Amino acid sequence: MANKKYIFVVGGVMSGVGKGVATASIGKILQAKGFNITAVKIDPYVNVDAGTMNPTEHGEVFVLDDGWECDQDLGNYERFLDKNFSQLNCLTTGKVYLSVINKERALVYGGKCVEVVPHIPLQIIEDIDAAAKKDKAEIVLVEIGGTVGEYQNILFLEAIRFLKLKHPKDVVTILVSYLPLRNNDNELKTKPTQYAVRTLNSTGIQPDIVLARAAVPLDQKRKEKIALNCNLEVEDVISAPDVDDVYQVPLVLEKADISRRILSKLNLESRKKDLREWSALVNKIKRIKQSQKTIRIGIVGKYFGTGNFILSDSYLSVIESVKHAAYAVGYNPKIDWIDASHHGSLSKYHGIIVPGGFGGRDVEGKMKAIRYAREKKIPFLGLCYGMQLATIEFARNVAGLKGANSTEIDKKTKYPVIDIIPEQLEKLKKASYGGTMRLGAYPALLRDGSIAHRAYGVKKISERHRHRYEVNPGYVEALEKKGLIFSGKSPDGVLMEIAELPKNKHPFFLGTQFHPELKSRPLSPHPLFGEFIKAALAKKAK
Image (cartoon, rainbow, N blue to C red; front, side, top):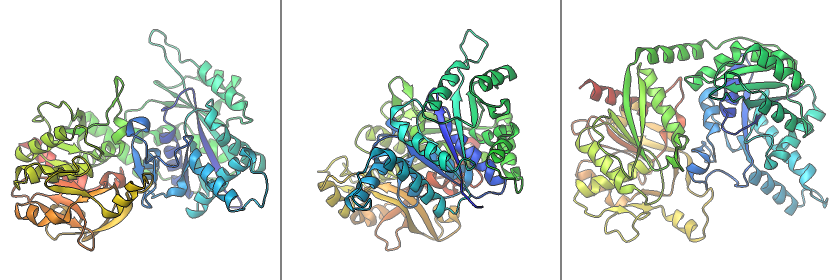
């Protein structure tokens, strides 16, 4: 291929309209057509990465193998494309400005007056090309967060204009825009999308395709209205109605002929057509939902509330991992969000998950849930902080270490069974918070015959981390004597990666210091989630 091809996905009308899923789905379709794809997410916030933000601010923080903390859309890209990405696939306003400022300080610009335009858009293009080069991509999809009318997006739109000007036949811009449907009306409203297109036009960009998001499919008349008012061919207005499951989206878009429209504009021809495995997955999920075979899973967390609303995006990867594992065995998971501060009876659940988190808020509520799961033999999976709290609960109520705690919660605890990594302590003293946790993929060795070992089927694993605190090595022997098994450890044996109870004590009680949910894929569920769901099904059968 003489030139790289670029597909920019921008949003209109409102955020949260599904640009990430649309980008991942288009990437999946083009991947199935035989092209090597990469995807880049651009976020307009000034944070260098997503790591310093509370999940209720911007949803789940997704962590890559190289330790980069990024937007949850990278999780969608990895799940749909079945590829691992790196920090090169993540851009923010802060990251771009930092690159330009560092270059200026190093005299890379040779004494020029460094300006917002053109130097910031040129850096954006340089960063996009770096990601494409690393992934040997023929087509690079670039999703720009937010909407086209937001002031902070102007420089990213300028980058599209620059590229389109230089490579007019290599750039396609797709606007994902929402068409509202009023409760007392039966007509999808196109005017907000028309305004979004005109706003995009004001930046010098004409969309090549409008992806019309709505509660229901778009009719022909609405397509014609958008096309007429937005300088588009009718075939370039693609209907993208709500679906029961995000994994249906590639099939919905391909049925609307989106790949033919994109490839035609990029002067490319399809090399093959193979969405068979994906189609089989989607059809299987449909059959499972129709069968009404369900399993109830409770997730006990603290990042659900945002005003009067529930923000399940805080644990998006956990939710998707549960779905992957449940679908694999023919069940539809019914997931309840359980606020750790005031949960009631947990007896109705077939499995309980305590996911990651930070700080002292609601930890006692979480530990009550963990104790209930342990004593009542309900399958339990603790993720990162969830494993740490399970260790504390075991120390207090089984090992007799009354008042045991994490020094994150109680610096003066008599039994600091969870403590900060020494090098992390130095970073915190310097107020060095961003990008300084134990981040990214690290290896671990598994204990023969353990639940974890049987689940993985291998001795050595690699999993992604995001934490500052660890199980205190000084308490490992005491905890193991009372029956807690540390079945996964760092290769040097110092860091405890997995804690579990033996099968003769509990059907499934396991916690991980890492985040297995970050590596689960719809076509290859994570083995630990798979074992958890199998144990939950056994609980349901009883």
